[in-house]
Image (cartoon, rainbow, N blue to C red):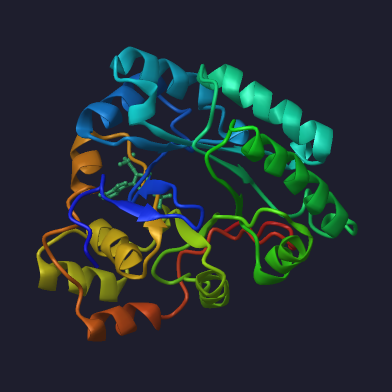
Length: 286
Ligand code: A2P
């Protein structure tokens, strides 16, 4: 791994360079959002992940404007929600996102979930129609890269059989205790970059005995173990935090390396911290 800072990049399958760590904005809708996002930019984050569902696009647009940095300094991802799928709906959703973000292009745009609801029968046709809209926006130069979120291999196969432009990214729940190996391996084979939402398992993983042990061994925090683990797997983590101290801590991932043995121990630890979300099931609430 040759990464040395959060601004170092991975290269997507269309050649676009993407910073290797993003700042997640889900639930930044609580508290003083614009201030938190401005702090994150001041801390050095340039890649921000939002979605129409999060309700944070307007705040992010404002924070970017107030940062006084040029738009091109930032890498911005948004996603269309389950009720915005379909050819026309996806195009309309994209326009709304641009407007809220106060920009005329996105760096990355994702389909948020493969099914609008568990049990939805005609997802194959709906996904292909939605993807068609993204392909056109991409070809028109309005999006620099297009991708998926929460797609499982069979959902991706359906698109690969029917697309002109291959997805560049798949964003999934990924953290120690829930690494979705089948999805990660499939994406790797297909040259699709995996991104990790909830890379520290929304805190649920931070008290796990192995993660705590390794934090002591490497003299870092449990959160840093989780984030470094993602990077060493070639996965792009999207940590979020409302505290400047933790925002900074989450960038300090480049001065230690988890050994091969410890990587295997993390990859095989007992399941823990799953959000309860699966695209084909009703959400399990813990
Ligand atoms: P806070 O905003 O108080 O920092 P995830 O991204 O896995 O869903 O987890 C997000 C949660 O993890 C947030 O509630 C955030 O709380 C917390 N968090 C973020 N960074 C750290 C860290 N370095 N150490 C402990 N908790 C963290």
